[in-house]
Length: 396
Image (cartoon, rainbow, N blue to C red; front, side, top):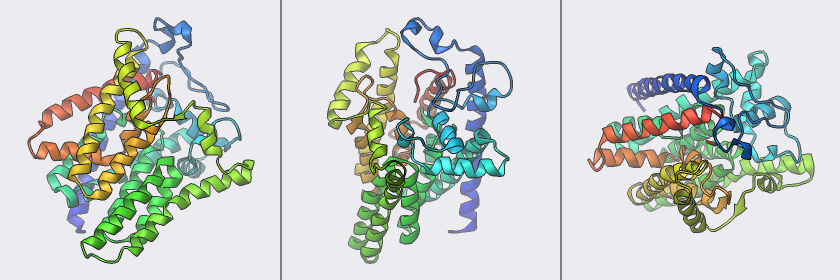
């Protein structure tokens, strides 16, 4: 890797990151200042919230001031990560569903900052996202070419749910580690790939999917006569160690290896066939049009369907490892659904599935999609979700 390539990737990634961060900060301030609270919308008596506290960590209350540049991002799951970073896990309160690497990083940086967990969380997320963009640029340049790499970085940051990449969520750290695992694997650096994959599995539950992707890449490289498969298969086997380490913590802490899985009941997630979730999500999307809060179902559907098509394109167009990762990242959330809102959170989960953004970049390079339309539609969607997220609407 030449220094010029790295400097170019860093310069482009920094420009995209800074531009989108500035725009989203303005929108978040506007949401806090101008949007009605969710509880004030007709139907609020049914329990639609404004600020939503979590056990041991109250949500910031509405109020004017420049502090909203920071507190406007302190929404929903961000509160859980901050609570865990500051006070640790508590058996039975739902916190076990949140994997520990991001809270641990917040805790470490907060200590360096003199006990400022929100500032630490935003710093960790921002640094991780910028690093992830650089890694993805380098990876995409190898797979798709420089022009498509530049586009894919932009499309990722403008994805309609990229708001979670700029918020105190675990997505940026997971994106960095998953991208690093793939980049290391493509360069045949299997020890680094296994380590990055294991850390990704410690950051989010879906990180374990990298095991399958790395195994496929190892077998593919062997078929290409680029070395034996066993180092890659060992790297793939190392990925679940991250998950196992977290499960072992809960065995020691609460006597329950599967506490993180059992906590899914707290969040009303149930196992279901992926196609059943897709059918239910489509039905609900068009069943409640014009009736608040049915718009959430339609918004989920409008974001998931194009992303799902892009996942399928990635399966056909890119190396098998990338296709396997994209498809698995789509199917697993569909198989663990929230029945009252079948596609809930799936748009957020798909934001870090980078082959989706590669698919868009590749289609634009092939002139099957216009670049201007992709940017305009994505940016408009991102603007809407940012306003809703900062306004405490149910975008999570």
